[in-house]
Length: 353
Image: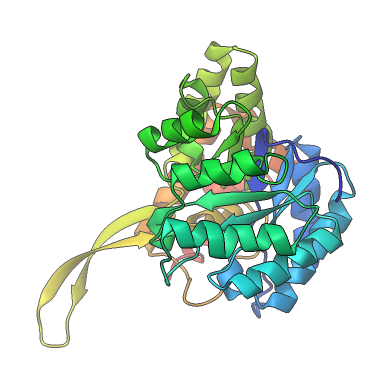
């Protein structure tokens, strides 16, 4: 293992940058990781949902984790995404992450085939624990994407039986009562990491949850500001934490973008439809707009509508207006000027479909 896994602070759910031909751009990946480290994050999470893991081949998946460990070089943690809806694949991926030197493995509940909580615990998490020793695993509970959910009781069984092997959970249920039950059943030693940027302070401040940090999407953009927010909260500097939360709120609110438009049908009818552009598309749009990466995602993810792109641009403008220091650290590593990028209509129109 590469260091000791400490489930606290800000862990960036890293995007996977692609070139224009949709191949993994390893130089852009290196630059993004160096930016994260320079801004003081506690760890990075390659090959999660934000990293478009469903469309990475396992060869690419392994190469991204290898690259992440190599670039980080012990300066922060590496929580490698190795989950699958196929236990055999998850075992193989977790074994690779361990051999590569990852600090821990993030395992999402099995999506689409929808096992029960009992099956998740016994035929997924426990089998991975048994087959791949010597690396901590972090269950990732996000029923809105997976259609299933490891229960608080089964999470507690995993943690209490093997506290060193299952030291934490990434909680993205959006359900504070569920999170409180996690804490009640598993006890004080379980690390609870927020899986939703905009719920981080709520989860950290709730005395029945006591979250210790976040696996963050938006820290791809603002790692320093989010790290400062979490550290201010840990230090009970509530005024500073609230100030940063207010300044960041425009972008924390658009991890996903909802846009209503009208579809014209071939038979002449018109129907109003709400499109939800999900992570990482809004994030990659903002990163590309600011000059951090080339916009490229793998199908079926693609470009957003012009209205959704405008929402992202406006959110960034609001953040920059509230506190220029939040986006300012992007400028030197990526050789850009934030005000210039935000003001360039051509940049943003090129990002829309």
